[in-house]
Amino acid sequence: MTNNFSIKARVASHADASAYLKQPGDAVIVDRQGPRWLIMLCPCGCGSELPVNLDRRAGPAWRLYESPKGTSVYPSVWRDADCKSHFIIWRGKTLLFGPRGDDWWPEEGELSEAELLDRVLETLSVHEQSIEEISDQIAGSVPWDVLRCCRKLCRKGKVSEGSGKSKGRFSRR
Image (cartoon, rainbow, N blue to C red; front, side, top):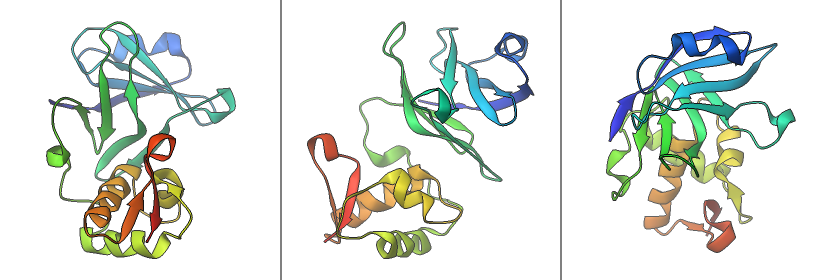
């Protein structure tokens, strides 16, 4: 299932966010000298406000990517309480996970797919790297696009993906 994701405002405190949240996927950024929180209405429609930490100084945090193609957040959001939704925010859409494969990946990116595949392959070494580490080295990339390319390169036999705790980490063969 795909819903629109829309940042409705930037506010100074969490208390100011609720007034802007009307529909599933509506979001507000709490910005105090930089993005601290993303507050959103859960995209599943349960009506819950969901705070997503964007400040690494406060512990594990998600990363916010804003571009002309839309806002992305990495990694996925997985609610372990209430509705138990699991979704990604990619290019202005929330994509709820379900029994599907790669069919929900959009075809367009900041870089052309061929260009990004080449850049990912150039960036990879024989040592495993996370999607974030790879994406950080490729200007204009979003981790979701890099993940897609890494998985395509795996299917072509050019790249290996770790297993177990190393799943989601990739290396050149």
